[in-house]
Image 1 (tube, helix red, strand yellow):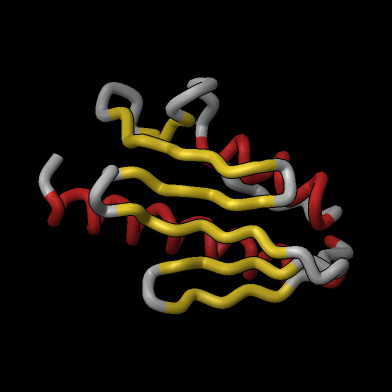
Image 2 (image 1 turned 90 degrees about the vertical axis):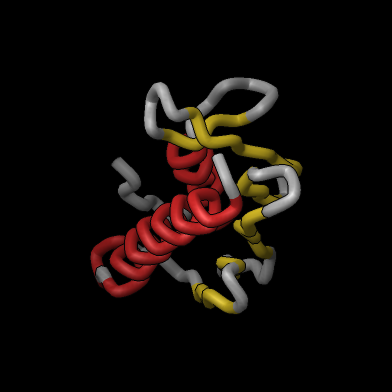
Length: 112
C-alpha cells in the first residue's frame, strides 16, 4: 500500500470511528460521558475520569496506533479482510476499540 492509499484508508477509518463516538455522545440514553476531538488526523477521546484514548495514524509504519490505559496497540490494514488488525493478537481495530472504551470510559459504542 502506498502513502496515498494509506492516508485515504486511515481517514475513512478515523471518520467512521469519530461518527460512532459522536453518536454515542449525542445519545442521551447511552449514558456516555465522553468528549472527543479530531485534530491533525489524530482522534483523541477523553473519558469521564479524565483519561484519554488516542487513535492516530503512523505513516512510516503504515499502521493505526491506539494508546489507552490498557496499553499501546498497533493495527495494520489487512487487504484480504478489508479491516485493520492488531499486529500482535490479530484482533480487529473496531472490536478492540469497543472493548477499550467500555472498560476505560464505561461507554458503549457501535462499530460494526
